[in-house]
Amino acid sequence: MPRQKGIKPIAHNKKAFHDYFVEDRYECGMSLRGTEVKSVRDGRISLKESFCMVRNGEIFAEGMHISPYSRGNMFSPDPLRPKKLLLHRGEIRKLHGLVSRKGYALIPLKVYLKDGLVKLELGLCRGKHMHDKRESEAARDAQHEMERAFSQRSN
Image (cartoon, helix red, strand yellow):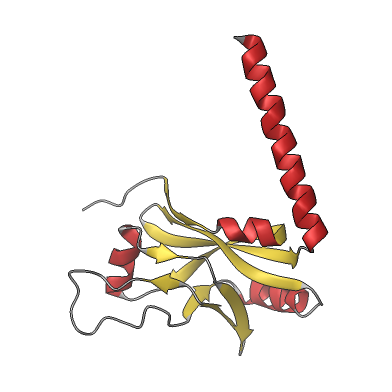
């Protein structure tokens, strides 16, 4: 069977954009087992409470839940096991240096299929304070009001 072309979104981490300022984004692969890939293709993945850690020169995604494949066998992996992310060694060193600074974290932003391969968009994020969240919410509400007024005026 030929590989699928293009990008197919699977899951988004909306909470990350609420809780963090995304300063930089990286695309990386994920080291998954067979039934995990089938489950991801079915869209049975949650990024809600996930984060990434650098350990021994490798990056792992923690807290990412991939539900067991419904037609899988009894050897299905643990849904919450750490998933290894595939990045170049130089990128890992750079990210480790940036994350070691206070207030920065590596957060999975979205999972998608790119030409048939499972990819993860990793964000270098800085935490928001409560007043920052309120400002973001107010700006978003103002943008919605402007769009609503513009669409009513043009009709």
